[in-house]
Length: 402
Ligand SMILES: Cc1cc2nc3c(=O)[nH]c(=O)nc-3n(C[C@H](O)[C@H](O)[C@H](O)COP(=O)(O)OP(=O)(O)OC[C@H]3O[C@@H](n4cnc5c(N)ncnc54)[C@H](O)[C@@H]3O)c2cc1C
Image 1 (tube, rainbow, N blue to C red):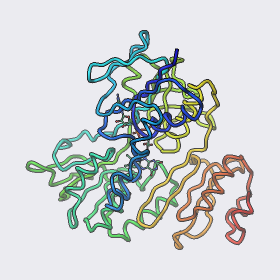
Image 2 (cartoon, rainbow, N blue to C red):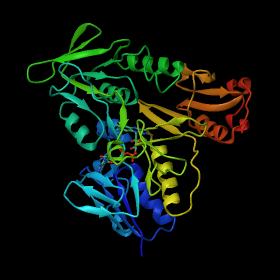
Image 3 (cartoon, rainbow, N blue to C red):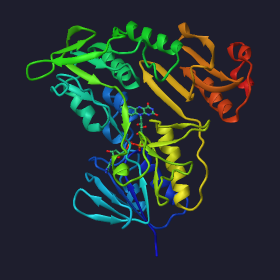
Image 4 (cartoon, protein in one colour):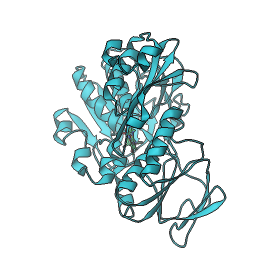
């Protein structure tokens, strides 16, 4: 009897899993259920080229439509999975259908953290997660409009950069004392803050948002005890894992669906991959990542395990962000206790910061320095010891450090 695999969530990880299941030789039936109107698409351009109007919608899609039929995947869109019956091994759908599975893969991604403060429901306050979100934002994202951005994380700053380029009046409100504080080291925060200010963005650090006011739509934002006029608001204050379905089915969850190194949940026939998971990092400890790398690599590992070829997941995480003409690329996860080593000069707008832990490269943050990033990734994967003075010495080619 041929096995049935059901995938819940038609996003980056779900799409990768379909491809990898077939590549690993799985010949049974695959059904993928997605609650959005579109087949799997890339989200990173949503806050970059797509918002900028430089990328047409069809180019967001990860695969051509024909891919799913050719891969023998029944793709059900605009339908959400509402419950999992682990005893009967069925998934209940919002259209009343029930799908039987032998193995189940959860690739449900995450949802944006919402602001809960007075006025938070006013029209004109946007979040950015889906194509539909960008399309809604576009109507108000007009030259000269005053946009208040809540949160100076990746998404807030990418939207700020696009807004500044498109002639909006941009103010970013951030409760912490530096931009991208949870994601990058202080040198990078300082550099990116200065670039945004240079581009005309107003940065309000240490300024928590208290509420919004307006007649029929948002007109003012209250932050740090003051009122600021605005025409629209974009909130980017983080993402939470979509683990409600798994939690309701009794799977082990803790801000994400807990999986082992083979992407297996606490139920041996249910797997999970991508933003929705909490997994073991390569250096131990549990973590939940929100990045394309993890979605792709974890989906590959889930597919291998489901196809009976398990392989432990311990990939080096990597991430990128585009702001203005600056390409930020990060590999590894730096810790505050690491020793940062600066290579190059931030004033040249091409530099990197390597993070050494016990003499080995644990992470690299590169700005317009693709080669530093690539070599840094290799050094991390190989656990190679490197002397700080050689890393910092720009006269030594980075390639010679391998
Ligand atoms: C604006 C933006 C910019 C980003 N930029 C970058 C970047 O520069 N670099 C980077 O590495 N990462 C970036 N990311 C993060 C990256 O896009 C995600 O990490 C990646 O998409 C995660 O893939 P996933 O498959 O886990 O989840 P998703 O791609 O989010 O897919 C999950 C899908 O499951 C659906 N779903 C959830 N529950 C159900 C249900 N019960 N039934 C049916 N369907 C369901 C969701 O609606 C969604 O369509 C960005 C994200 C956003 C939003």
